[in-house]
Structures are given as structure tokens and as C-alpha cells.
Picture 1 (cartoon, rainbow, N blue to C red):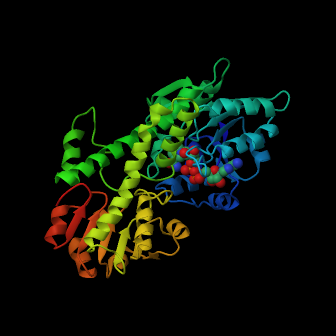
Picture 2: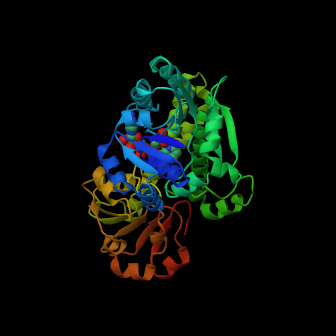
Picture 3: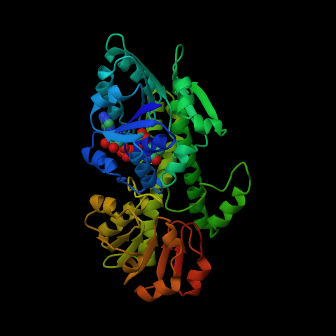
Length: 440
Ligand code: NAD
């Protein structure tokens, strides 16, 4: 099938390349010329394991191309995926849907014939219906445009696998006449054929599925972090507690890792947008608990900074502090709302000489916090450190040899902000190891 993918960021570039991998003919479009030049030359402008190979293969076989020209997009296909950003609107909790609107305003007047736009961006409930009205107003005579919503659940770091073999496909369709299901069944024939559940809902439900999933995940993380605060006060161990409650299959161990909390381009802005939209709909009380989820999460960053000061004898002023990690999570170079960088920035403001190292996110981190010191390797980063903080749980950091690292630092002190280090090995090597939610 021929299709276009509008917006080629983390979501869109992955979707475009993976749809081509599944045998479709795909044209990706973005307003960012540099991004398009990079993708056309076979370079993924962000870190995503496996994606460079998929991109190169499908550019090579001619099934995939990229452009900045909307006219070409309008003429290329009758099925369009929309994956532009929906960031937090400055000064409010609401999502900024102006990029979504801009796509409809740009594309629809250029279309002719019958078109289907499948929205993948995470949007406030009601957006799809609003975009349908806008598309109806802007469609040239004789042209019909249907808007359906097909929320995306990919995880950065596993985006290729999640796109090619998703754990479920959700499709929101308008009431009455719709050809979205028939088209989506063809687009996702491989996954559906392999048994992937395919759920067809109304538009509003599909929009709410995505934000509800993220709100649930955020709540689970903040739950264990709130319990972690009590564990610290009571002298209990939150990791053992999480293991124990996680064995109940109704609870599950995933997303019960106490530590520095969540960040990134999705969870924080999605829970805020959910609260904002619920308020607009008059259901604000239903989502007020998310304010607490957000507050618990943000408190983790401050708590880690306080721990760092405590471990350094009351102040980090003039101390060499190494922060391992800048990406919001491992296997990604995404630093949007990154807890690791937030901690590094706060320590720097508190007077610490802060050195950061991340296996993939250095360039992105440097753009946001140019004044921090950036090391080229873990070894370089920890050399001379008065305190090391593990802030993003990259495998590389989990596997640091505490004996070797102990020879490089000025003082053997480490805060495990993710509760992933083997405590015994570090203590045996003479380190003072401080972990969140545990008294070691
Ligand atoms: P991103 O910022 O990486 O990408 C958005 C892209 O859209 C950018 O390249 C931007 O230049 C482009 N764009 C903006 N306006 C445009 C326009 N008018 N026409 C064409 N392109 C335009 O964001 P992302 O992380 O890919 O997220 C996109 C959407 O997908 C968001 O709604 C997000 O919540 C959702 N989502 C993201 C993920 C994820 O893991 N990143 C997962 C699921 C859902």
C-alpha cells in the first residue's frame, strides 16, 4: 500500500521506516529540512537501536523516501499517518495541538479524491473530531477526507520491535460511514495475521486509551516512589518490598523500580494534558490524583539533590560531582524533561563542579545545558569525583567495575538513583553506596 507519514521525529521516522519494512511504499514528510536531509542520506537523526538498518534497507530498495514538500505528499498516496509533536503548551498544562492543526490546514486543501488520515500523535480527547470538522471545511469540492485515530504505544529504545510487532493495535473510527478499519487491516496485515489484537473503538475512546495507558504507568512509578519515601523514613527496603508485591500477578513487578522517577517527551506532558482536558470537560475532580503523581515524581529530583548534599557533608559547593546518564531512560538519546539532566543542572546551580557522561545523549544534553562539563567516557567522567550519581540505568553503568572505578575517584561515594547496582560488590570494594528508598 502507498502511504505517507507526516512528522518524522521519534515516532514518525520509525513508523515510516517500519511500514516500508513491512512492504508498503512510504513517503515521510517533515518541516525540518535538516531532519529530512539526514533521513534521505540514511542517517537517523536520533539514537534508536535497529532503526538505521531498517532505514538503509528500505531507502535502498526504493520503498522509502522523504520530502518537505506537502504537494508531493498530497499526490503520493490516499492514506496518511500523522505523527507530529503535541508538546505541553507554554504556561499551561494543556497539550499544544497547533502542529496537528497545521498539518490538516496544509495538507487537506491540496488533496483530491478520497483520503484517509490516521492520527498517531497523542492528543486530548476530542481532537480527532475537531480535525474532522476542519478537514470537512478545507476539503476541495469533490474531495472527501476521513480522520481516524490510531494511537502509538512504541517505547523509545524498542521502537522498531514495537512498531513491527505491537502488543495491540487500537483504531478509533468516526460514527457512520468509515473505511478506516478496512484500510488499517491492510496496513497492519502482517501483525494482525500473527495474532496481534486489533481493537476498533470510537474516536474519543481511542484518544483516551493512549493517555490513560500513560497515566497508569506514571501512577505506578509514583506509587512505588511514594512508598519509597516511607521506606526511607522507616528504615525499610523499597526494592525488596517491590519484589514482594510484584509477585502478585494483579500488581506485577514492571514499572515498580523506585528511584529518580519518570521523564521524557511523553509521560510528564501526557498526564498534565489529561488533567487539563478532564478539567475542560467538567471532569476535573476525576484526574486531580495525577497532580499528586506529578508532584511525587518531581520531588524525586529534588530528593536526589538533597541526598547528594547530605552525602557530601551538607553542601556540594566546590565538589566534583559526576552524573552518569543524561537521557531520560536507557537506550535512548532523548533528553526531553530528563530527570538525570535536571539533577545535573540543579547540582551545578548549587555550586558543584558537575561532569556528565551518557553513552548516546551527549549532543542533545550539551544543547540544553551547555555550561556543564561533558566527559567522553565513564572512566573520564568518574576520574577525581567526590561523588558519583547513577541517574540513567544504562547497561554500561550497571556493569561498572567498582574496584577499577574506586581507583579513579577522589572519594568512593556513589548514589544509585535507579536501584540497579549490585550493592554487595560495591560495598566490598569499599564504596559508600546510598540508594533511594533503602537504608544500606
Ligand atoms: P518529535 O518532536 O520527535 O517529532 C515531531 C516531528 O513533527 C518533528 O520532526 C517536527 O519537525 C515535525 N513537525 C512539526 N510540525 C510539522 C508539520 N506541520 N508538518 C510536518 N512535520 C511537522 O516528537 P515524537 O516523540 O516523535 O512524538 C510525536 C507524537 O507522538 C507526540 O504526540 C507524542 O506524544 C507521540 N508519541 C511519541 C512516542 C515516543 O516514544 N516518542 C510514543 C508514542 C506516542
